[in-house]
Image (tube, rainbow over all chains, first blue to last red; front, side, top):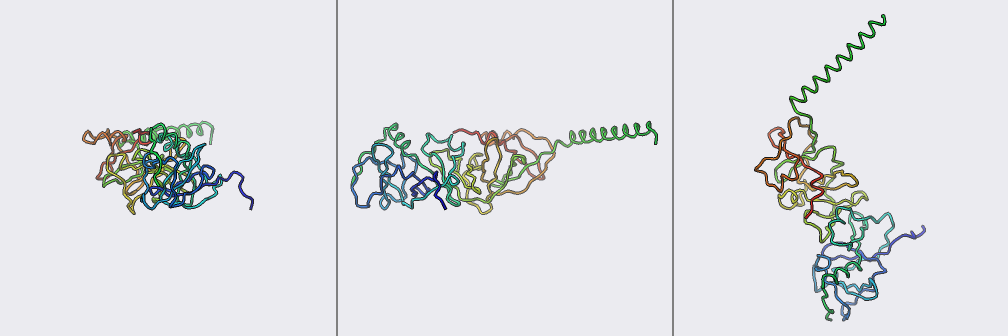
Length: 139
Length: 172
């Protein structure tokens, strides 16, 4: 079978009990557990409204929405999946209209479960607008 | 049969149909127009969705919560490949939060350009009620009354008839 040229590579992870996805091209890499990082840390509770379930044992994603890297702590990094156009959908207008910005640009269909597709650039913009520079991560 | 008799027969039938129609209208005026509702229960109280707005009723499927949205929106569900928002009817009506009840059902309601799920404690029946839709009782909290077209008596209960458009366009 030929690969779908419109398929989207998405890194899936869980955060706050929710299944999330970020386009692979916005992901720099997965941080090693012992690694000390010098990049700005996104606070999920502030920028997303969800907190990691266990802040001590979670994993960290290094994201590159633009020129700069940011760190996003998550509960669990799952897998890199390829979503075809049939697996993608827009957020229902009732939900999209209730969000403060376009931080969730769509959804992926993963069986019964719905994957929320996160726009990291919007998140970083929200962080800046809120003046929420959480500082550098301490190793 | 001669032509004159045919005409008179047709006129008689037309007159009979007119009378039948007038009788039906008079009956409807006495009894009230028929209102078709899907009866749902919330904390023991009964509410009705206008049946012509109901697309289907499904058992609760996994609902993915979406952070940073009003709490009466439970999230999104994947219904046979269609992504639908699901609202908590109890929370909308000020009756507390929805619970994961095995009897719980999601009522999929049609609205122009979209479909939306409403979580209810249970779905009882599709009913036809004749009577007059009365304004919500003054004792009903405003939080609830604003989402009702009115109330109507059905058997031994008072059913709140839900105003779907107002429910869908709530802003917080």
